[in-house]
Length: 436
Ligand SMILES: NC(=O)c1ccc[n+]([C@@H]2O[C@H](COP(=O)([O-])OP(=O)(O)OC[C@H]3O[C@@H](n4cnc5c(N)ncnc54)[C@H](O)[C@@H]3O)[C@@H](O)[C@H]2O)c1
Image (cartoon, rainbow, N blue to C red; front, side, top):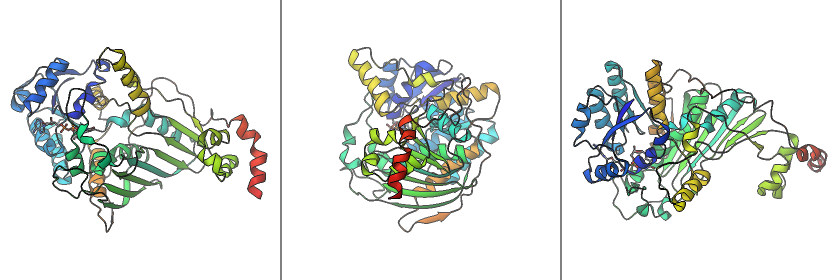
């Protein structure tokens, strides 16, 4: 698919990290309202620069526009691209106004065009692994989810100094104004809604806890930096999602079932570690012991935290395993390897690749417009719940999503699970302690 990027800021460089793995995406050029920025990017990646948005939209070769502009420009750029007859892939949120988002999807439908967007972590190996483990029955009937999206105390993080590899400053002012919920809650929502369907009821609370995170004047200055939402899904699952910019980083999700628990370490990491614990009386009772609870090495011997699952493979799993074009020095390669291993690895082009694949095969998009509308509605409502709290019944629904296509046969996670020898041997001891 022939694509062109509008907006070449901080996130653009993250998109470029996995470009080498998506040869089917033919990048025809870029445009940014900040011409200095598009010039830097064009030079660095050898891209053609369009002199204006109109010139880009007038290029008959461009089939899809990738909208990576600031959130406040999303609506106008997406609308212009659809009106010019282009498919659009937009960064999240499509807009911060539910009616405007709906109007964009209506426009796309009228014109017979695809409108899709981030986050692309729906297609990553970590969620595909969790989803398969749930479907394999590895935790029995899922009943409860705890999802954390804590992004550190932002006021201490010196975000003013953060830059992308080609020098785009991290847009901390926009992030504070838009809010941590609108910026980040969809990383968890996309997984939850894909696995469990639409949320039928939501109860939420949001508040600003740390004002004056920066000396830069903000408008608005009081966007919530904390939100918590409880969601009730049609299949009976309840979920609690927390988003903050005040609590130390934690991007974990736990799915608890009647017979076990699946934990994923980091919703920002496409190949995050996924653990499965099948509940046993040993593991559950062992949690009462301080040392076993607080020393993971000892706790795991008794089954606490379970076993790490081998991740499933998907058609583009390799994209985040190697990084090319980051520089050839030993230092560059070491830093890149360390970041992918320890911090995060995301293939942000994957959503565009999935969109192109569905278009090429003439099948519906994996994330339907109704699905996107649901995520948009939930994100906005949770962020705006306020200090009094709010309960709402979302107006949007969507048909269930198909589980991800896997590359070849994968092991059955329920059948292959075995408690460790120590856990089995310790059963008598823990039972004895339990009775005292
Ligand atoms: N920063 C991140 O880590 C991150 C991660 C995931 C998603 N996102 C999302 O990506 C989008 C962009 O974020 P960013 O961090 O790159 O922001 P940014 O401010 O660094 O970049 C946005 C770019 O868009 C350009 N722009 C704004 N209006 C435009 C217009 N009308 N036409 C053309 N160019 C225009 C700006 O000049 C700027 O270069 C946002 O929707 C954000 O939520 C950001």
